[in-house]
Image (cartoon, rainbow, N blue to C red; front, side, top):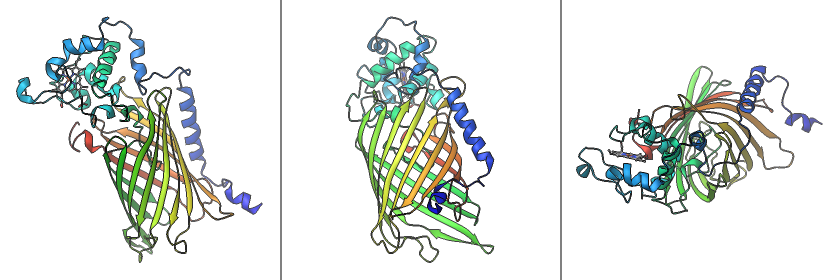
Length: 394
Ligand code: HEC
């Protein structure tokens, strides 16, 4: 009985969190379209469905007629010198680059011109000349320049949640900060991710924490983690991506400040991302933390799930807002241990027109076992450095 009570949400959880969650679910349900067969090109593809008046030309014909002069008939791009202006065109045959850009983003560029994604105005707008359906056809042709199936498509690169890790391999910097209340604390983590090859990614993570005790702030660095991720399967038609990760957390942190586990910890987890109808998505992460010295730290299992939906401002090509709700669970791997549940409603927003700098803010609240676990405000800034410098594309 006592055991059961420990795992139940406590009565004293402030009501506004429940209101927040209920409102989120209500908005989510109310804005769902009737379920329909998902278009193979995934996220935001339905933009094209309303526009059926096409020129009757194939994507290849439109490309030859309107794009090849600058992009080359073979899609390899041209140097600035060949074009008569100072902006080179990208190499669409480069699989490092081409598959990771979502079709809808390229349609946005072709429809509105380069500046809609923070590119040069040398890339003209074709929205007046072609319907969106035609532009989807020509972008499908452009996608064909790298048709190697091992490269996961950009549509499967779902908005990053605050805690649930992504299945998609990334080139990113992420700085996450959590502000705790009792005791007052500020914890940050700096994550650097680098993709290599079609399916792999390495990651380095450094946490820092300061806590206020008796009026004085003390803190330092936590344990440095080095991780590796590999995509095991991905399929845009099926709409999902699945990866496996391994991480070593090294005892480099400040032990005196209580910021190190004082033993190396091996962490392994799977991540799964799934496209749902109407620009919604689901992400899941589940795994274990296995310390080398179990006298110093306990073995733990954890799982995290995120449900969200992306909305765009000013029509389909504008700023993207992705409200999400995340549920976190963790328990020590010993018999009778209780599961700690947390909920994290949050909103991610693109900050610049290139959409490669993003901000996410949320509120993490324990749902049970609240003793010693307080709520915190959590936010990150994310920079997808592959898509351009931090100051590019605003
Ligand atoms: C007058 C020359 C010109 C024509 C014609 C042209 N483009 Fe471009 N395009 C550019 C330039 C220049 C860039 C690079 C802009 C930059 O890097 O700031 C570009 C960039 C792009 C990109 C962005 C790729 C990325 O980096 O994510 C896409 C997509 C694209 N063009 C598609 C098309 C399509 C489709 C057509 C034909 C319907 C077309 N372009 C016709 C000059 C042109």
